[in-house]
Length: 129
Image (cartoon, rainbow, N blue to C red; front, top):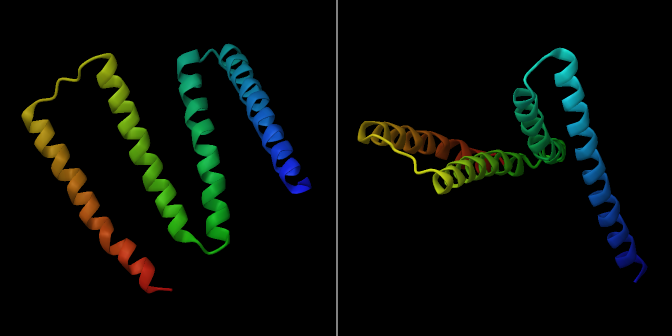
């Protein structure tokens, strides 16, 4: 029972740190953009990029330090796929995306080629164990 209470307390502390840390990060970025005369949009997008990548970086460092490189690769590729699909998907819901046939063929070929090139790396990673 004590262990469950400890876990609940840690979750509450973690959520609180995320909330207040995010608030401080946004306020600091607004102050930074004002002082440097940089567009708030540019600073905001940069802060969002770093803010969303920081947890993934922590997971990857932790996994790599423990010898679990497969988790790092899965986290990197999974987050990139999710980010791309979410951004394109939400954008398409808000405003339809017009794509020419040539662009669609070229981009599809590049994505499939990249996937084929990565397959041996994943296969070789398992052979090294």
